[in-house]
Image 1 (cartoon, rainbow, N blue to C red):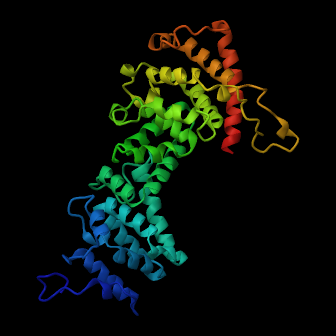
Image 2 (image 1 turned 90 degrees about the vertical axis):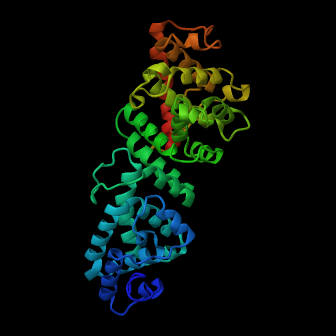
Length: 387
Protein backbone atom coordinates (compact mmCIF):
# COMPACT_ATOMS: atom_id res chain seq x y z
CA UNK A 1 0.00 0.00 0.00
CA UNK A 2 2.97 2.35 -0.44
CA UNK A 3 1.71 3.55 -3.83
CA UNK A 4 -1.69 4.37 -5.33
CA UNK A 5 -1.52 1.18 -7.35
CA UNK A 6 -0.58 -1.02 -4.41
CA UNK A 7 -4.02 -2.42 -3.66
CA UNK A 8 -5.39 0.44 -1.58
CA UNK A 9 -4.91 4.00 -0.53
CA UNK A 10 -1.33 4.81 0.48
CA UNK A 11 -1.02 5.44 4.22
CA UNK A 12 -0.58 9.03 5.36
CA UNK A 13 2.98 10.08 6.12
CA UNK A 14 2.42 11.40 9.64
CA UNK A 15 2.19 8.03 11.47
CA UNK A 16 5.13 6.68 9.48
CA UNK A 17 7.46 9.43 10.76
CA UNK A 18 6.08 9.74 14.31
CA UNK A 19 7.79 8.22 17.36
CA UNK A 20 7.95 4.43 17.17
CA UNK A 21 8.68 1.95 19.95
CA UNK A 22 10.94 -0.03 17.62
CA UNK A 23 13.15 2.49 15.72
CA UNK A 24 14.95 -0.20 13.70
CA UNK A 25 11.63 -1.29 12.17
CA UNK A 26 10.73 2.32 11.44
CA UNK A 27 14.05 2.92 9.69
CA UNK A 28 13.48 -0.16 7.55
CA UNK A 29 10.12 1.27 6.51
CA UNK A 30 11.70 4.64 5.66
CA UNK A 31 14.34 2.83 3.60
CA UNK A 32 11.54 1.13 1.68
CA UNK A 33 9.78 4.45 1.17
CA UNK A 34 12.84 5.84 -0.63
CA UNK A 35 12.76 2.86 -2.99
CA UNK A 36 9.00 2.87 -3.62
CA UNK A 37 6.75 5.10 -5.74
CA UNK A 38 5.12 6.41 -2.54
CA UNK A 39 3.80 9.90 -3.25
CA UNK A 40 5.13 12.25 -0.57
CA UNK A 41 2.72 15.12 -0.02
CA UNK A 42 4.82 18.28 0.20
CA UNK A 43 4.08 21.75 1.45
CA UNK A 44 4.41 24.71 -0.91
CA UNK A 45 7.93 25.46 0.36
CA UNK A 46 8.95 21.81 0.07
CA UNK A 47 7.64 21.71 -3.51
CA UNK A 48 9.90 24.67 -4.34
CA UNK A 49 12.88 22.78 -2.89
CA UNK A 50 12.10 19.75 -5.04
CA UNK A 51 11.95 21.87 -8.19
CA UNK A 52 15.66 22.75 -8.19
CA UNK A 53 16.17 19.45 -10.07
CA UNK A 54 13.96 17.68 -12.60
CA UNK A 55 11.99 14.85 -10.97
CA UNK A 56 14.10 14.19 -7.84
CA UNK A 57 12.95 11.66 -5.21
CA UNK A 58 10.34 13.68 -3.34
CA UNK A 59 11.21 12.23 0.06
CA UNK A 60 14.34 14.41 0.30
CA UNK A 61 12.26 17.59 0.13
CA UNK A 62 10.03 16.46 3.02
CA UNK A 63 10.89 18.16 6.32
CA UNK A 64 9.14 15.51 8.40
CA UNK A 65 11.00 12.70 6.60
CA UNK A 66 14.38 14.43 7.03
CA UNK A 67 13.67 15.34 10.65
CA UNK A 68 12.80 11.74 11.52
CA UNK A 69 15.95 10.43 9.84
CA UNK A 70 18.03 12.89 11.85
CA UNK A 71 16.34 11.69 15.04
CA UNK A 72 16.99 8.03 14.17
CA UNK A 73 20.63 8.84 13.54
CA UNK A 74 20.95 9.50 17.29
CA UNK A 75 20.45 5.77 17.87
CA UNK A 76 24.00 4.43 17.78
CA UNK A 77 22.98 1.09 16.30
CA UNK A 78 21.17 2.85 13.41
CA UNK A 79 23.62 5.65 12.67
CA UNK A 80 25.51 3.83 9.91
CA UNK A 81 22.26 2.86 8.16
CA UNK A 82 20.98 6.44 8.27
CA UNK A 83 24.32 7.64 6.92
CA UNK A 84 24.15 5.14 4.06
CA UNK A 85 20.63 6.33 3.24
CA UNK A 86 21.78 9.95 3.12
CA UNK A 87 24.66 8.99 0.81
CA UNK A 88 22.11 7.52 -1.61
CA UNK A 89 20.12 10.74 -1.36
CA UNK A 90 23.19 12.88 -2.02
CA UNK A 91 23.99 10.88 -5.12
CA UNK A 92 20.46 11.42 -6.41
CA UNK A 93 19.74 15.02 -5.45
CA UNK A 94 22.35 16.88 -3.40
CA UNK A 95 20.81 20.20 -4.48
CA UNK A 96 17.42 19.31 -3.00
CA UNK A 97 18.96 18.08 0.26
CA UNK A 98 21.01 21.28 0.59
CA UNK A 99 17.89 23.44 0.31
CA UNK A 100 15.86 21.16 2.58
CA UNK A 101 18.46 21.00 5.34
CA UNK A 102 19.04 24.77 5.28
CA UNK A 103 15.30 25.38 5.52
CA UNK A 104 14.99 22.73 8.23
CA UNK A 105 17.84 24.32 10.16
CA UNK A 106 16.02 27.64 10.15
CA UNK A 107 12.68 26.14 11.15
CA UNK A 108 11.33 25.54 14.62
CA UNK A 109 11.80 21.82 14.09
CA UNK A 110 15.51 22.09 14.85
CA UNK A 111 15.66 25.12 17.11
CA UNK A 112 15.10 23.02 20.21
CA UNK A 113 16.73 19.84 18.93
CA UNK A 114 18.96 17.69 21.14
CA UNK A 115 22.73 17.82 20.37
CA UNK A 116 22.80 14.48 18.58
CA UNK A 117 20.23 15.58 16.03
CA UNK A 118 22.13 18.78 15.40
CA UNK A 119 25.32 16.74 14.90
CA UNK A 120 23.96 14.79 11.92
CA UNK A 121 22.68 18.02 10.37
CA UNK A 122 26.08 19.66 10.86
CA UNK A 123 27.78 16.67 9.23
CA UNK A 124 25.53 17.08 6.19
CA UNK A 125 26.30 20.79 5.94
CA UNK A 126 30.04 20.11 6.20
CA UNK A 127 29.73 17.86 3.17
CA UNK A 128 27.43 20.10 1.13
CA UNK A 129 28.66 23.66 1.71
CA UNK A 130 32.20 23.24 0.31
CA UNK A 131 30.86 21.55 -2.80
CA UNK A 132 28.40 24.33 -3.57
CA UNK A 133 30.26 27.39 -2.23
CA UNK A 134 34.01 26.87 -1.91
CA UNK A 135 36.33 27.55 -4.83
CA UNK A 136 38.66 24.70 -3.92
CA UNK A 137 35.90 22.17 -3.41
CA UNK A 138 36.58 18.79 -4.95
CA UNK A 139 34.58 18.17 -8.09
CA UNK A 140 34.24 14.55 -6.94
CA UNK A 141 32.66 14.78 -3.46
CA UNK A 142 32.42 11.79 -1.11
CA UNK A 143 29.00 10.82 -2.45
CA UNK A 144 30.30 11.00 -6.06
CA UNK A 145 29.17 13.63 -8.47
CA UNK A 146 25.69 13.20 -9.84
CA UNK A 147 23.51 15.47 -11.95
CA UNK A 148 23.31 18.66 -9.92
CA UNK A 149 21.94 22.07 -10.86
CA UNK A 150 23.96 24.57 -8.83
CA UNK A 151 22.39 27.81 -10.16
CA UNK A 152 18.84 26.81 -9.26
CA UNK A 153 19.92 25.52 -5.85
CA UNK A 154 21.76 28.77 -5.02
CA UNK A 155 18.77 30.82 -6.18
CA UNK A 156 16.42 28.69 -4.07
CA UNK A 157 18.68 29.07 -1.04
CA UNK A 158 18.49 32.83 -1.53
CA UNK A 159 14.69 32.63 -1.28
CA UNK A 160 14.97 30.53 1.88
CA UNK A 161 17.58 32.69 3.61
CA UNK A 162 19.46 35.43 1.77
CA UNK A 163 21.61 36.08 4.84
CA UNK A 164 22.78 32.46 4.79
CA UNK A 165 23.87 32.73 1.15
CA UNK A 166 25.76 35.97 1.84
CA UNK A 167 27.40 34.50 4.95
CA UNK A 168 28.46 31.29 3.19
CA UNK A 169 29.77 33.26 0.20
CA UNK A 170 31.78 35.54 2.48
CA UNK A 171 33.14 32.53 4.36
CA UNK A 172 34.19 30.89 1.09
CA UNK A 173 35.84 34.16 -0.02
CA UNK A 174 37.76 34.55 3.23
CA UNK A 175 38.88 30.92 3.16
CA UNK A 176 40.28 31.18 -0.37
CA UNK A 177 41.62 34.73 -0.11
CA UNK A 178 43.61 33.85 3.03
CA UNK A 179 45.94 31.83 0.80
CA UNK A 180 49.25 33.38 -0.20
CA UNK A 181 49.26 35.87 -3.05
CA UNK A 182 46.83 38.29 -4.67
CA UNK A 183 45.82 35.70 -7.27
CA UNK A 184 44.01 33.58 -4.67
CA UNK A 185 41.96 36.55 -3.51
CA UNK A 186 41.09 37.56 -7.07
CA UNK A 187 40.06 34.01 -7.95
CA UNK A 188 37.95 33.81 -4.79
CA UNK A 189 36.21 37.07 -5.68
CA UNK A 190 35.32 35.93 -9.19
CA UNK A 191 34.09 32.66 -7.72
CA UNK A 192 31.65 34.57 -5.47
CA UNK A 193 30.63 36.80 -8.39
CA UNK A 194 29.76 33.58 -10.22
CA UNK A 195 27.48 32.62 -7.35
CA UNK A 196 25.89 36.08 -7.44
CA UNK A 197 25.12 35.63 -11.14
CA UNK A 198 22.83 32.74 -10.11
CA UNK A 199 20.65 35.19 -8.17
CA UNK A 200 18.01 37.70 -9.24
CA UNK A 201 19.81 40.89 -10.25
CA UNK A 202 17.98 43.24 -7.93
CA UNK A 203 18.96 46.15 -5.70
CA UNK A 204 18.35 43.91 -2.69
CA UNK A 205 20.99 41.41 -3.84
CA UNK A 206 23.58 44.12 -4.47
CA UNK A 207 22.88 45.76 -1.12
CA UNK A 208 23.12 42.48 0.80
CA UNK A 209 26.57 41.69 -0.60
CA UNK A 210 28.01 45.21 -0.76
CA UNK A 211 27.09 45.97 2.84
CA UNK A 212 28.87 42.88 4.16
CA UNK A 213 32.31 43.27 5.78
CA UNK A 214 34.30 46.03 4.12
CA UNK A 215 37.10 44.21 2.31
CA UNK A 216 34.70 41.57 0.96
CA UNK A 217 32.42 44.34 -0.35
CA UNK A 218 35.31 46.30 -1.88
CA UNK A 219 36.60 43.21 -3.65
CA UNK A 220 33.16 42.40 -5.07
CA UNK A 221 32.52 46.01 -6.05
CA UNK A 222 35.83 46.50 -7.86
CA UNK A 223 35.89 43.20 -9.74
CA UNK A 224 32.13 43.16 -10.33
CA UNK A 225 32.51 46.38 -12.33
CA UNK A 226 34.42 44.40 -14.95
CA UNK A 227 31.82 41.63 -15.29
CA UNK A 228 29.67 42.94 -18.13
CA UNK A 229 26.61 40.94 -17.09
CA UNK A 230 26.70 42.52 -13.61
CA UNK A 231 27.81 45.99 -14.69
CA UNK A 232 24.72 46.23 -16.92
CA UNK A 233 22.44 45.77 -13.92
CA UNK A 234 23.97 48.29 -11.56
CA UNK A 235 27.24 46.83 -10.25
CA UNK A 236 29.20 49.79 -11.60
CA UNK A 237 31.73 51.03 -9.08
CA UNK A 238 31.35 54.81 -9.17
CA UNK A 239 27.96 55.46 -7.56
CA UNK A 240 28.40 52.77 -4.90
CA UNK A 241 31.88 53.95 -3.87
CA UNK A 242 30.92 57.60 -3.79
CA UNK A 243 28.06 56.83 -1.43
CA UNK A 244 30.53 55.19 0.96
CA UNK A 245 33.14 57.96 1.15
CA UNK A 246 31.03 61.07 1.78
CA UNK A 247 30.78 62.66 5.22
CA UNK A 248 27.21 61.41 5.53
CA UNK A 249 28.24 57.75 5.07
CA UNK A 250 28.88 55.38 7.96
CA UNK A 251 32.55 55.78 8.95
CA UNK A 252 33.96 56.87 5.54
CA UNK A 253 37.52 57.18 6.89
CA UNK A 254 37.67 53.50 7.85
CA UNK A 255 36.22 52.56 4.47
CA UNK A 256 38.90 54.55 2.63
CA UNK A 257 41.64 52.92 4.75
CA UNK A 258 40.46 49.52 3.53
CA UNK A 259 40.00 50.75 -0.04
CA UNK A 260 43.50 52.26 -0.32
CA UNK A 261 45.02 49.17 1.30
CA UNK A 262 43.15 46.87 -1.08
CA UNK A 263 44.15 48.81 -4.19
CA UNK A 264 47.69 49.16 -2.88
CA UNK A 265 47.96 45.37 -2.81
CA UNK A 266 46.24 44.88 -6.16
CA UNK A 267 46.92 47.71 -8.65
CA UNK A 268 50.14 46.27 -10.10
CA UNK A 269 48.19 43.37 -11.67
CA UNK A 270 45.62 45.59 -13.43
CA UNK A 271 45.38 45.46 -17.23
CA UNK A 272 43.04 47.12 -19.75
CA UNK A 273 39.59 45.53 -19.59
CA UNK A 274 39.81 44.22 -23.15
CA UNK A 275 42.95 42.27 -22.24
CA UNK A 276 41.59 40.68 -19.09
CA UNK A 277 40.74 37.29 -20.57
CA UNK A 278 41.55 35.06 -17.62
CA UNK A 279 39.76 37.09 -14.98
CA UNK A 280 41.08 34.99 -12.13
CA UNK A 281 44.65 36.04 -12.87
CA UNK A 282 44.62 39.81 -13.41
CA UNK A 283 42.24 41.44 -10.93
CA UNK A 284 40.20 44.45 -11.94
CA UNK A 285 40.66 46.50 -15.11
CA UNK A 286 42.56 49.73 -15.56
CA UNK A 287 39.29 51.45 -16.44
CA UNK A 288 37.93 50.58 -13.00
CA UNK A 289 41.17 51.71 -11.36
CA UNK A 290 40.93 55.05 -13.18
CA UNK A 291 37.34 55.53 -12.00
CA UNK A 292 38.26 54.84 -8.38
CA UNK A 293 41.28 57.16 -8.46
CA UNK A 294 39.15 59.91 -10.01
CA UNK A 295 36.62 59.59 -7.23
CA UNK A 296 39.35 59.66 -4.56
CA UNK A 297 40.73 62.94 -5.94
CA UNK A 298 37.43 64.62 -5.11
CA UNK A 299 36.96 63.71 -1.45
CA UNK A 300 35.06 66.13 0.72
CA UNK A 301 37.40 68.31 2.76
CA UNK A 302 36.32 66.90 6.09
CA UNK A 303 37.11 63.39 4.88
CA UNK A 304 40.40 64.04 3.07
CA UNK A 305 41.88 65.98 5.98
CA UNK A 306 41.10 63.20 8.47
CA UNK A 307 44.05 61.31 9.84
CA UNK A 308 44.45 57.57 9.44
CA UNK A 309 43.06 56.10 12.68
CA UNK A 310 45.65 55.50 15.41
CA UNK A 311 45.04 51.89 16.34
CA UNK A 312 47.21 49.39 18.23
CA UNK A 313 48.77 46.41 16.54
CA UNK A 314 47.14 43.08 17.40
CA UNK A 315 48.58 41.78 20.67
CA UNK A 316 50.20 45.08 21.61
CA UNK A 317 50.75 46.05 25.25
CA UNK A 318 49.14 49.06 26.88
CA UNK A 319 52.38 51.01 26.40
CA UNK A 320 52.54 50.09 22.74
CA UNK A 321 49.00 51.33 22.21
CA UNK A 322 50.37 54.83 21.82
CA UNK A 323 51.60 53.84 18.34
CA UNK A 324 50.10 56.08 15.66
CA UNK A 325 49.90 56.27 11.91
CA UNK A 326 52.57 58.99 11.89
CA UNK A 327 50.05 61.78 11.33
CA UNK A 328 49.25 60.65 7.78
CA UNK A 329 46.00 62.01 6.40
CA UNK A 330 43.55 60.30 4.08
CA UNK A 331 44.47 62.81 1.34
CA UNK A 332 48.19 61.99 1.70
CA UNK A 333 47.52 58.27 1.40
CA UNK A 334 45.37 58.86 -1.69
CA UNK A 335 48.14 60.92 -3.29
CA UNK A 336 50.72 58.21 -2.56
CA UNK A 337 48.41 55.61 -4.09
CA UNK A 338 47.73 57.76 -7.17
CA UNK A 339 51.43 58.40 -7.80
CA UNK A 340 52.23 54.70 -7.44
CA UNK A 341 49.43 53.75 -9.85
CA UNK A 342 50.46 56.35 -12.44
CA UNK A 343 54.11 55.27 -12.22
CA UNK A 344 53.10 51.64 -12.84
CA UNK A 345 50.39 52.39 -15.43
CA UNK A 346 51.10 55.67 -17.30
CA UNK A 347 48.16 54.91 -19.62
CA UNK A 348 45.84 55.86 -16.75
CA UNK A 349 46.33 59.47 -17.84
CA UNK A 350 44.75 58.58 -21.19
CA UNK A 351 41.72 57.07 -19.44
CA UNK A 352 40.96 60.02 -17.20
CA UNK A 353 40.82 63.76 -17.76
CA UNK A 354 41.21 64.21 -14.02
CA UNK A 355 44.37 62.10 -13.80
CA UNK A 356 45.93 63.46 -17.02
CA UNK A 357 47.25 66.70 -15.48
CA UNK A 358 48.19 65.08 -12.15
CA UNK A 359 51.57 66.48 -11.08
CA UNK A 360 53.94 64.05 -9.41
CA UNK A 361 55.83 65.64 -6.53
CA UNK A 362 58.62 63.05 -6.60
CA UNK A 363 60.68 61.30 -9.23
CA UNK A 364 59.65 57.89 -10.47
CA UNK A 365 62.56 56.32 -8.58
CA UNK A 366 61.30 57.73 -5.28
CA UNK A 367 57.64 56.89 -5.78
CA UNK A 368 57.84 53.19 -4.99
CA UNK A 369 59.79 53.76 -1.77
CA UNK A 370 57.41 56.51 -0.61
CA UNK A 371 54.32 54.51 -1.55
CA UNK A 372 55.58 51.43 0.24
CA UNK A 373 56.04 53.49 3.40
CA UNK A 374 52.49 54.86 3.16
CA UNK A 375 50.99 51.48 2.34
CA UNK A 376 52.76 49.85 5.29
CA UNK A 377 51.09 52.35 7.60
CA UNK A 378 47.76 51.74 5.87
CA UNK A 379 48.16 47.95 6.20
CA UNK A 380 48.94 48.33 9.90
CA UNK A 381 45.78 50.37 10.42
CA UNK A 382 43.74 47.97 8.29
CA UNK A 383 44.98 44.89 10.15
CA UNK A 384 44.31 46.53 13.51
CA UNK A 385 40.75 47.35 12.46
CA UNK A 386 40.26 43.76 11.32
CA UNK A 387 41.40 42.36 14.64
